[in-house]
Image (cartoon, rainbow, N blue to C red; front, side):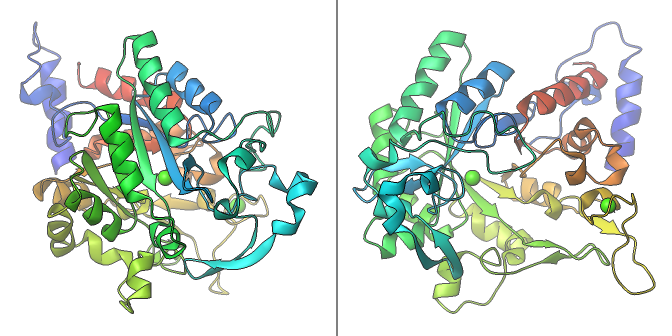
Amino acid sequence: MRTVHFALAATAALGLAACSTTGPANKLLTLDGNPPLVIAHRGASGQLPEQTLEAYARAVELGADVIEMDLVSTKDGVLIARHDPNLAISTDVAKHPRFASRKKTIKVDGETQTGWFSNDFTLAEIKTLGGISTDPERPQDFNGKFKIPTFQEIIDFAKAKSKETGRTIAIYPETKNPTYFRDLGLPMEDKVIAAINAAGWNSKTAPIYVQSFEPGSLKYMKAKGLKTRLIQLIDGDGIDMKTGAMTYAVPVDRPYEWTKAGDKRNFDVMVTPAGLAEIKTYADGIGPWKRYIVSIKGSIGSDGKPLDVNKDGKINDADATSVSPTTLVADAHKAGLFVHPFTFRNESRRLAADYNKDGRNEYAVYYKLGVDGVFTDFPDTAIAARADYLKSLGR
Ligand SMILES: [Ca+2]
Ligand SMILES: [Ca+2]
């Protein structure tokens, strides 16, 4: 209903000589009425090794409003930008013989992993490593060429880029595996707050958003005086292609602090009205996996298994189609929370068939639903889709 009404109103506005920016015709359904933010997830990670200053510079060049980073700790307690404590995933550590003996198998948030872990390396050692692409289907030409930045270096970078471009480049740090690091005696939160205070960014209007999957990490920082916007991330493991329902599995079934405390609820409790009301007590927004807003469903064969609809020998999102949106965006807005879903990607294997292999079609659906921002590996595509969307509203 909302979409239909919206489309009719927009059409009517085209007949007017002057469009008011506050009139219903071109009204955006975002919480604050502003266009949705384009958040460069790990930088321009579709093009360059993620979470390097080079990937962030490319994102800024492509026009991103915000650059996103995950924070993990080194052995000497310095916050660096990496998605995982396990350096094998996104660095060339395996190619450094001097670190061979540090390879080990441990549990991270209940998941068994083999590799090299950031908490076993000093910052000086980390600085001898290079970032690599985390996706074999993306460009590999820059593997090992760019260094791993510290949180402080990214803050300095964002300030310099804002000055250079005349735009405000905001940052979006995430406390990653905060319970894991706290248990190792390397808690991150006080260091995050100290860096934000030193940057002069400890306010709701500063160009910074602080995110975590663990409510305890956000609650702790709020209690310790962090006044920036806070975002509760909400994950899931996969989609049951038969029903379109979210599935849950370790380590993305629930915040690890819940698992540790014996709390068996999954992330889905966070998207109920009661869950959203609880989040509103300590956060300003939610960052849900996009499937909580628009899920997908496959075609099921007589053997009960999903069909390889496009016959490319693989079963993935391209063999599925979108189902009707949930009410999550409207529900979150009603609770006073903004909504930044993750993660949007260009590859056709990651796009439901109804988007016709064009990521812009996926953004269009979410923009129309009123999301307040999108986490994307391809900021230029998100920006192009946003321009089309704003134009369609006569803005
Ligand atoms: Ca992240
Ligand atoms: Ca297929």
